[in-house]
Length: 164
Image (cartoon, rainbow, N blue to C red; front, side):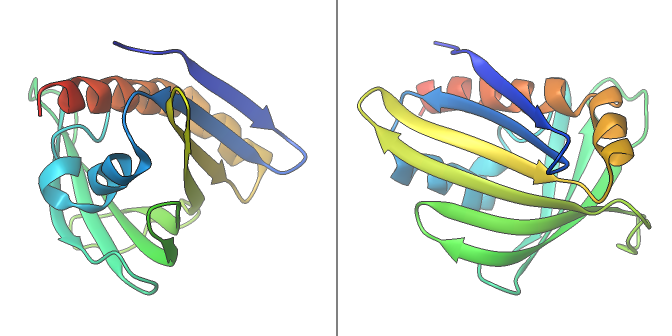
């Protein structure tokens, strides 16, 4: 069952928070976020395939992945994240960037991301908090569909969890 996604924008902190309560334990949500076998099944917007090239979930570790439209129209997007904090099964902190096909970072694309997993009575609240260098970058991320993409990813995560 898809649940409501909550969106919060904070211009003072240059942050976008996208969160949802999912109906499974934090331990499983954590595995979904940190195991390449799982994250490739749900990460990204609907109609996109995620390929993980590297995923070393520890401080200093790297996650390299791409998102490719299933329709064949549009370009494949390459990203590289470097983990700064890993506190299983409660918190991930990483800096995510866009890259070119050779994994060279695209300038001014840094997104400082914290993912929090808080287990409660109704399930696990997953909060994706993304901090941008400027409010213009925050607005640009929203304009290019980041909120819809993360909402789709939550939908896909829930659908994937139901089929396990």
